[in-house]
Length: 426
Figure 1 (cartoon, one colour):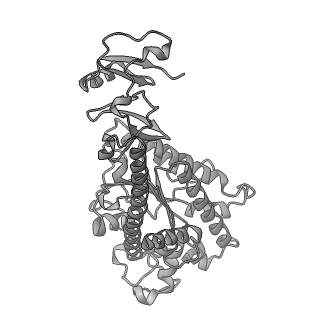
Figure 2: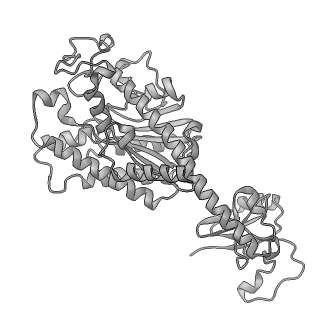
Figure 3: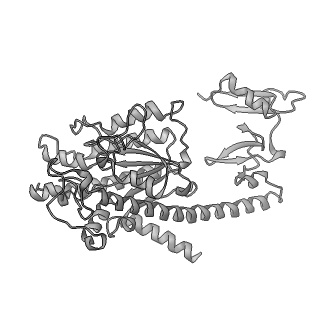
């Protein structure tokens, strides 16, 4: 138990002091569900939204990535590609576009913004669409925006500075809410790196850039915390890319980099494929593919660590529920609760209406948690709830709450139900 308390204390420190550490893994924000584990080792799909730090130049009609024949193969060597190739093989669905902002109606940009990227997701990956076979419990949503939003906002004096970044962040989390409605439950959001470290801003400094980055990052973390609090079945992380890239630069000898204002690309004078492995900067705004690979390894280490923490948190919750279930069973004269075998509790005995039935038994919900009905507590007479005498010779009745189509009745019949009372919620 002491070890668990240590883990939970560490989790609290990570959350409360997100920007006090050094490496990204030591200073990122973690907002975990207590009931729904983060099983990263079982993940099969990676869905991405972002800008040039994330893009992999896919075909937006087929969602396929073919880096071998792509003119932008070198520009596609970002953290997602290294993650799925070197550490964790997954299907990659990458909607990110170079130069993208969250909403081009707020921050003008010629690239495809997050709003449009989400539209492509809807077209291809929402329910009933061609690539809709991803599973909520085995899919990670990756989101990295803000670099172009902050740069363009600071450079364009016409943009209302009083509003700061509220409309941008609100738009981002509206889309995250839409993703949640489509079934997404696991999110990793990257914050903005230190823009003043970019070669371009080393040569052409912009006043106030550092302050703007910190403000944007603070708002991301606050809204991520708020979102997870409102959606307790989600696991949400804000990865501290700001600190991770800072750490690599400050420990350049350890990683084998040379940090100078001499970026490699020089407006196309050199081929990106020939970049030496000691170059930190690919061009004036982007780290090299070697840095992106280091970032991918750090992200993977972070996600592996989170899976372990999540296991501890959800196991503790399960133990607590088991103790509660045990106490409930004792209070009910030790009557067997069949739902316990399925890792669910049984409903209170005063709950007698079955909302749905399957091959295991009849079910309802208490406190937004599924529970099984005790066999002897299931009320076989539903007419009395409508002020009518009980019918005679009713062997099995299922109450369906909500709207239901006629073709949905057949599966219930197959489970043994023969009499139905349909209640429509107004």
